[in-house]
Amino acid sequence: MIETAELIIDEKATLGESPSWDERLEVLYWVDIIEKKCFIYDPSSHHQKSIQLGQMVGAVAPTESGGLITALESGFYSYNRETNTTAFISNPEEGMSDNRFNDGKCDPAGRFWAGTMSLKGHKEKGALYCLEPNLSCSKKLDHISISNGLAWSPDNQYMYYIDTPTQRVVRFNYDITNGQITNRTEIIIIDKSDGSPDGMTIDQEGMLWIAHWGGAKISRWNPKSGEHLLDIPVPALNVTSCVFGGQDLTDLYITTARMNDEQHEHAGGLFRIKTNIKGSPTYRFKKNTV
Image (tube, rainbow, N blue to C red; front, top):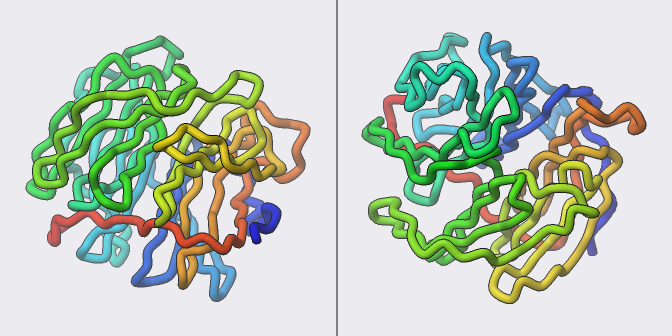
C-alpha cells in the first residue's frame, strides 16, 4: 500500500531540490537552490537545521568522512559540518558565469555526478560532470539544457538520466569500474500534459520514481518495458525530486518549489510518502578526506 503525500516541513522553499538520505545519521539533506540553503532534517526529532552556503547550491550528498560534497554556483566544494566551512575542490566551468549547477548525486562507486544549466534559459549550454574520489573531474555529456535526474540500476549495469526539456529519460550502459557511460537509449517519454521530468530515484525492484515539474505528482515506471506503473499526486505544482529514506528505506521524501506556484498553500514544502517498497540507498562520496 502507498499512502498519499504528507507535508513534513512547510519550508516554502523557492526551489527545493536534491534530497539525499544519510543512513548512518538517519537524516535527510535537501537544498533551496535560489536561497542558497542546505537543510538537514531529522525525522526522529522532527527538527530541521538550515545552513547558509553563500552561493546557489544545486546538490549535496554525504561523504565517507561524515561531511558533505556540494555542487555550488562556482563548482564543487566540500562542507565540514563541525566547522561549518566549505573548501573549494574544482570548477569545471570556470569563466562560464551564465551557468549554475543543478541536480547531482553519487554513483555506487562513490563518484559525484552533477550537471549544469544556463541561468538565462539558453538551451544546450549545460553539461554533466563526474567528480572522481581522487578529485579529478571529467565531462560526461555536453549540449545539456537542464541537467536533472540521475539513478543507477540495482545491478549497477545502467545509469538513467534526465535533461528536463527533452521530456525523456535516457539509459546508458554503465561501467562501475571506471564510470564510463555508453549506448544512449531513450526509454521513457513524458507527455507535456503531465509536466516535465525533473529529479528521480530508483527502488530495489529497479523501478524509477520521477518528479514532475508542472505536473503535481510523482510517477513510477518500469525502465525495461517503459510501462507507466503508478501516479501519486503531490499538493504542489512543481515537484522537483525524491529519494528513499527512513530506517528501512521505504519512506519516499519529496522536494517541491514555491516559484511559479501561488495556488498551492504548501508549495516549496518537504513531503513524505510511506510505501511498502524498499528504495535504493543514497551513495556516499568515497574520498575519505572530504
